[in-house]
Every structure is written in C-alpha cells, then in structure tokens.
Length: 121
Image (cartoon, rainbow, N blue to C red):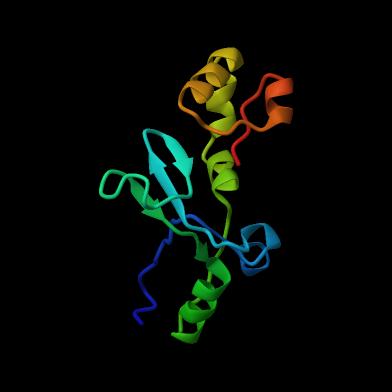
C-alpha cells in the first residue's frame, strides 16, 4: 500500500460494538425512495436506492493489516459539527428548518424538536 497518499472513507456504518447491536439483528439493509427510508428491497425493484451499513472496525482492521496507518475516525454528526453546521443552523430559522426536515420525511430527534433545534444524528 502506498503510505504517502491518504484515503478518506465516507460511508454509512458503525464501529463493531454498534454494528452488532441487538437492534440490528435483522441486518442493516435500507432502501430509499422519494426521500423516505424503508427496509423492503422488493417494493420497487430498479426504482430505489438500496444500501447496507459498513462495519468500520473491520474496515480499520483490514486497512491496518495491509499496512495503513489509521489517522482518525468520526461520526457524520461530529464531522458536520467540525465543518461548522451548528453555525449554519444558527443562521437558519429553527422552525423553518424543522418544517423542511419533516417535509422531506427526515427523522427528527424529539428532544431537538422540543427545544426548536435540528439534531444531526
């Protein structure tokens, strides 16, 4: 492996202790159609995106075994915070942001909704 070039892996996934959590006993397969998520890959064959999550611990172990140096790991939420999402949201009317998220069918953290903020999870 060429150790002079960085590799950034951006994907849906979890560290091993979360990946094998009992709530995911049926797997991590997810389907997306019209900005809504569901778990039936046969609902609209060829018309929707189908994805499965990554075990980031297994990925890191494989990269390490191949000679790569792991420089960091972060969640999407922390990445967005580090990139300034909280400042962007601070400039946005919270009520409009919540309405937009609901219209898109996005999941809203109930605590965030109760205080008028959008939570990135």
